[in-house]
Amino acid sequence: MGFRQILQPLLVMLTIAPAWAAPTDHQVYRKEREQAEKREREAEAQSSKARQKLADAELSVDSAVKDFGKASEKYRLAFESSPEWTSAQSAMKEAQANRDAAVTPVLDTLKAQPSYKAALEQKSKASADLDRLRSAGTGTAQLTEAAKKVTDAAQELSRQELEAIKADSNTSTTVTKLAEAQKHCAELKGKFNDSLKHTPELAGPRDALASARETRDKASVELSEALQKEKEAHDDVQVAIDRERGHKKKDLKL
Image (cartoon, rainbow, N blue to C red):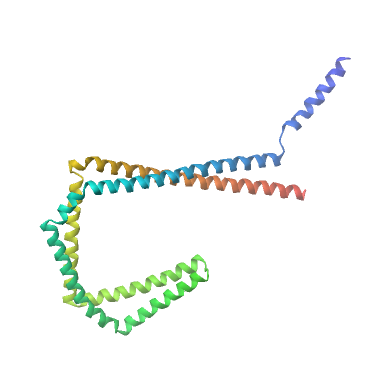
């Protein structure tokens, strides 16, 4: 066999080899779609793990809160039975009773006014319209507008009530005294909670609670990141599917 006869088949094979090796456009788009779907499955698996991790962390926080509550119970009981706290609580209850006694007749008078009746009717109508739209499966835009009307009507009622209370000096005074009594109780409770942060006997359960909360917060961030990656992977799949479908339609037209 001559040299030319040997060389010719080799040249033919080299010429057609690239055609064998090069994938078609359809194969390329299909592979891109399959790779995107694989990434999506991996992202879904990661977000599922992150979800479980956060759920476990929440349980750990709940457990740590209970443990801290048990450990600090004797301190809480001592605080709640202290003269300062019981006196503040009694003063707040008295202020609440005085406020209610003063406000009730003022609001009863207001409710008889045409302006208040009109505002109340407007709120009732807006609430009924919102319920009707929800039952009918109305779109988000209309529901948002209907909900805003309910809120606006409720705010108008509150505005009239506050103005009526402010206009009556005795009622306004009782409202101010109640606010002061509530503030005093809140301050005492805040001081007590701060004292627990520095009680040596509570160092163990306090640190355990802080650690559990830190772990929970980190797990929450990880879940947010995982969900974002899952969304991006899902979007990539949709893009790959659209490209593959578009190529198929183009082939059909040809």
